[in-house]
Length: 172
Image (cartoon, rainbow, N blue to C red):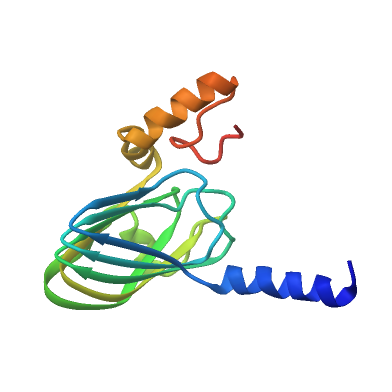
């Protein structure tokens, strides 16, 4: 491979990493669980639907993850590891709704994540919608009560490995 080809491949990989992951739910439910991406930006468009984003994977880049929301009477559930700071100050609200994050409010007040914690910044607009944040064991249970987890269990049994949807940090 020539240096020109190598540079082109590197540029293509960098461009792909810069592109946000786009998720769209219109009157349906969409779930992305386990080790499903390595992106650091997400665009979530939902209208009268629900989206579950698993942001617990060790494959995600360290530092800040940005979730750009455009919700219309919809719900987004973020599954995050313990110690993650979820910043919601850049959301434009119309109608009712809120970010439900009981445990993480202590991190948001101080502005500092615990040692090794990740930061998730929510931006965009929400009209009559909500964002729910599930951490630790609650996030694990939310992932386990899904069809994706059952399929992951079947796959793991066939291959003789461990399931990873419930705990993405587990090595398959």
